[in-house]
Amino acid sequence: MAITGEQYDALVKLMRGSPESPANRAARRVLVDGATQAEARRETGASRSTVSITVQRYTEADQSMRSVYAPIKA
Image (tube, rainbow, N blue to C red; front, side, top):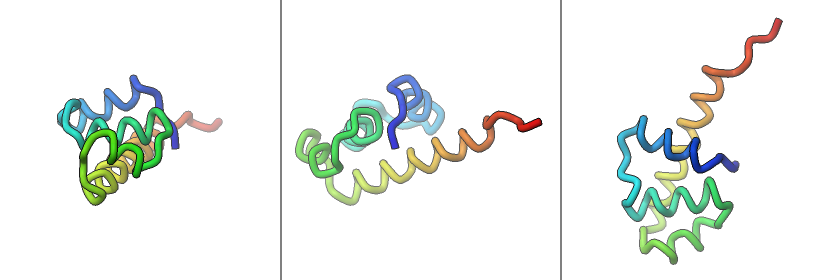
């Protein structure tokens, strides 16, 4: 799943995340830039579980927001 940088920044803000934390930098690399979790871990120094959990949290939050704001079908 890819999201835009602007969408990612909004999710981090809404979820009160720290944009500069290794976990959030890694999740951004995965969700916005399309990097693998392994690449993102190596680049940021975040642990495997931290990256996995953070990517999952932001993915679920993005899906939840999209379902709430999905266009209404006539």
